[in-house]
Length: 124
Image (cartoon, rainbow, N blue to C red):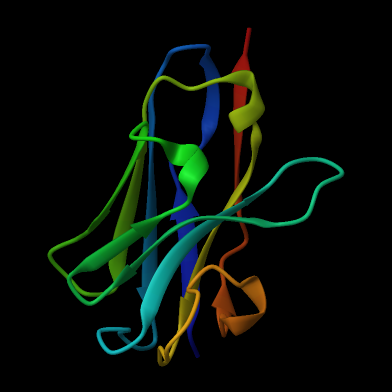
């Protein structure tokens, strides 16, 4: 059984930083993708970034504030968030997919597995 477990969320002040972690168990995704999405209250789930092989893709809004990295093990990824803003407040989800084809990597429905999410709240 595949499980994705996020950790590292919490409450932070504007301009602060948080580092989220996601650990997958049950399989590795070295030939697929692992990604971060977020969902703010009342909004749709939005793509943050993804790791595919040695390549990392970011949503435009991250604009250098967010950094995604893969851990030493292929089944772990991290999301370093700096210069946080109130609009970054959301539940952050880790997602994974078994394979990757051509096209946009940020569509939520392309992902096969999801974590339970971790709340990030940025206070002003």
